[in-house]
Image (cartoon, rainbow over all chains, first blue to last red; front, side, top):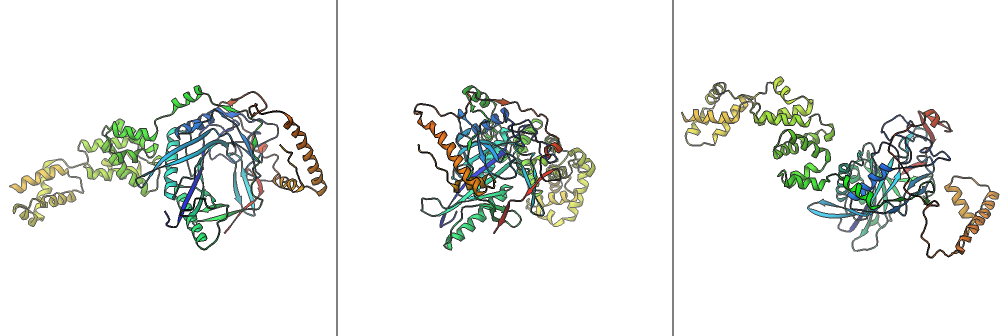
Amino acid sequence: MLKDYDITIGLEVHAQLDTETKIFCSCSTEFGAEPNTHTCPVCLGMPGVLPVLNKQAVEYAIKAGLALNCEITDFSKFDRKNYFYPDLPKAYQISQFDLPLCEEGYIDVMTDEESVRIGINRIHMEEDAGKLIHAQGGESLVDYNRGGTPLIEIVTEPDITSPIQATAYLKKLKNILEYLEVSDCNMAEGSLRCDANISLKPKGQSELGVKTELKNMNSFKAIEKALTYEIKRQRKLLKEGGKVVQETRTWDDEVEKTFSMRSKEEAHDYRYFPEPDLVPLEVDEAWLQEIKEEIPELPKARRERFVNELGLPEYDAEVLTDSKSIADFFEAVLEEYDDPKTVSNWMMGDMLRLLNEEELEIEEIKIEPVELAQMLKLMDDGTISSKIAKTVFEEMFNTGKKPETIVEEKGLKQISDSSELEGIIEEVLAENQSAVEDYQAGNENVIGFLVGQTMQATQGKANPQLVNEILRKKLAD
Amino acid sequence: MKVMKIDETMVEKVAMLSRLELSSSEKEQMTEQLNDILEYADELNELETEDIEPTAHALPIKNVFREDKVGESLARKDALKNAPQKEAGSFKVPQIIETDE
């Protein structure tokens, strides 16, 4: 939020659809294959070939449209977007221009206790381009494996007014697409990419300012940083009486700046025209109904179920459903250990903290849901104390070992044998005579200190309840 | 509707977008031929189309799909056969984007 300027941001997200094959040919979409091993005459743009639309891709796109509150148009078509760039073997990209598949949707996002509705202008289908690797000596290497991978491009209205809102929108969008299982949304592998249009205008002015388009942000953090940088850059320019140039700028994550992308060639003129090799796409009510029925429980519904049926606090439900994988992990633990709040506490506390510290995603965690359940059972049956459980959990997190194995190997079993504890407690009492006297003088609070001392003497392994009992008995004598 | 007139500037622009290098006599020839084509197509404007739905495709068919099943791809050496330059299993091309502060 700036005092002197209004910020206007619109986002264009490209999400790769998680199909087995490309959008117009049967080449595999597998990531990470050797360069140019997943190509054929169709996706290489050889003369005389015919593209044929992948039905699964259309259904995924419609699913996304429905979940994002869009109108699914009953008639849409494909168009050629012409531009000359080596990542496009045909010198045009098959996309949708004036009749996209989905229109007029929205996502509600929460930032700072404020709910904002971000409009979605359209979602259209298109093919991905190949990948350019800039080699040394002013040349580029092209790999067309990615060329022809089905994409949906989700275009927002210019409704976003801050970088934080932008990332909140993106997180929500990613979460919904993951729940739908229409895209794996892996930003590092480029299955989810985001370009941003951003402009500033003096407060009160109705006409939008000149915008720049930002590219090459590969994480949510990068998007937030790039937008923040660009706001600063444009504001400084405007304040000094300069003008923002309408252009595309690329984000450099290393130096944390945007740079003008100067094409050696003239500005784009896409000369869209209908793709004559593809027939129109009509979606009737019956087909739409079929797809509607396949839509799984979405984050909002799951959050409500966690609150209403599992009795979780709103906050817990929000955090857990924020990522499909975390919510799936949570429910898998519940299958083995039916105490939602306890499981939630461990996941939101120790688990998310450790994941954050190690900068890991939940998918990379070494702990199996069933092992977390086993650890909680070990606590319940008194094998380990809750304090030791934290140590066991960290060890599980770091090594992937089973909780029983860790308890065994590290000798972490809780001491619940009264005679063993009595001996230890007698030593503690002997060493802390003044505390004993305080207690007997009526200051019962020192019991906490004495329990602490006993726990320390047993490296946390003593059963705290038993320690408490024995201490009270001995002090009363 | 009036016939759009093509002049040499437009021919130059389209040639640039298509990465075609035209001599000045070719430019002249293209200007003439493109205008002829437009004029010919303009005859359609004589038809009364007020009550006719726009057509997106010449054929009265729709919804032609493939199932999402992986088929065979080309061997890489075949895929690269037409490449004027190649390196490391890839097509090699001149770099055309640069960035600048």
